Length: 235
Image (cartoon, rainbow, N blue to C red; front, side, top):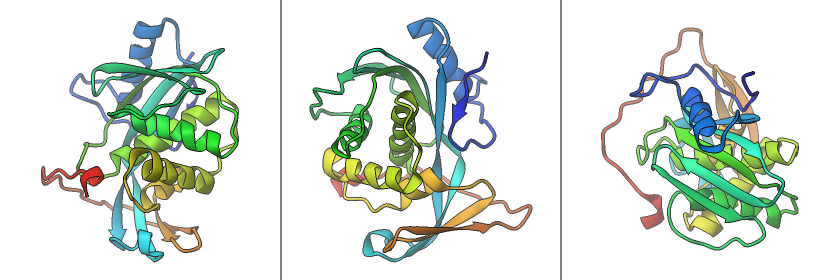
């Protein structure tokens, strides 16, 4: 039986191996952990249409979610240990929810989410998982925020917590600001957590209110990769 998908997913994109990211994650989970995952979560990347650099100045922005995103196939554990294999980085990391320590690398975005959720009073549960993504890293399409929101969905689903998009976005922003050390605004996390297919999302970053803006039928948004990479941790 195919596990349920938590998160707003558009059409799947095949990777170099000809498999969609969700399929790759599910298959890799079975190979690494044995058996099928009980949950699959998804969080899209984003592109911003209007309002550059205004989200952290309490202005208005108009981003939209992409069909490219991050996927996590997971199965809850009986303890507080999180074991996560990244197909994109080709490595596995693990940590305990009750003993979080800062380190280096992609896993810090996941640990930061666990830290922010627990700081907010959430009671979390460990899980085994496999993560993979379709968003190019460093291309300005919010690959890190997609990983954060996917991780937030994974923790929420494993612990049977309600999904609250604005709360999740604020916690993801806090994780990136205070745990990872990137002073980002909230636009990326909020449109990824609350975006709607076929719509852009008008965000008032002062009051954190949102309004879905329907895109005209047949609208195509072309996003070009210039191959110029950036790293906000260093900016």
